[in-house]
Amino acid sequence: MLSNVLFTYIGWLLAMSVMDMNPTATLLSENGGTPDEETTLMQGDTYTGSAPLEFRFTADETETYSYRYEWNFARDASFSDIFLTRYDYETIYSFQEAGTFYVRVIITDMETEETNTSDAFVIQISESELEVPNAFSPNGDGVNDIYKVKYESLVSFEAYIFNRWGQQLYHWSLQNIDEGWDGTAHGKEVPEGVYFIVVRARGADGIEYEEKKDINILR
Picture 1: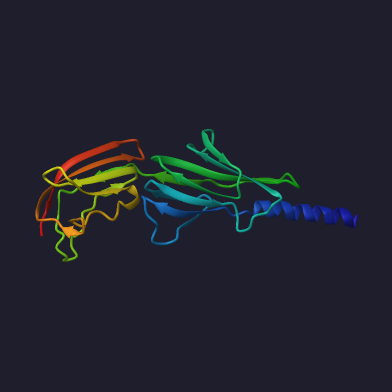
Picture 2 (picture 1 turned 180 degrees about the vertical axis):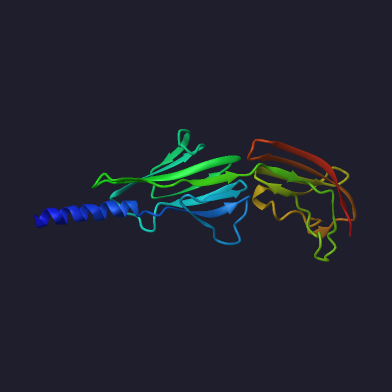
């Protein structure tokens, strides 16, 4: 009798250990940059941000080797449109498309066959945006010294600066998009005047951007 009670109690503890799982999602990068502060979501939380948006999803504080982990990534709350499944305790995913996405983890105790499904993490990716200014003033006063574009949810970006003779002076891409252009070429300040920029980019919502315009440098 005592052994039956003990067996039942151990089984209850194992079942409760599955039910007590606490999956989290930690923000790794957003809109091409590293976040200024740590952001961690609990199951059921919603996050709205700009692509590329990368999260690390963790099933619990400690991995248990008798558990089976299944992560589902879907485009609908009912998970009838699952586009990705992974069988890891921890997984990293970069969201590259605009829209709303749902992520859950299903945890199964292989010894007791108890299964628990988490509430969904809801990830909302904003539509893309690109604004290309036509002037800046790299005079060292700390105001508008760097030429930068304003953007949201871009998954590709290339920009080229030319002088009036068509010579390329500078190029930057998505990886260093926030660095912009400081108004120099070959280590020297370029003269005040009109320059030309060509920008090609693609948004997370599929929009293709191609901007060609003058840039006025005011010193």
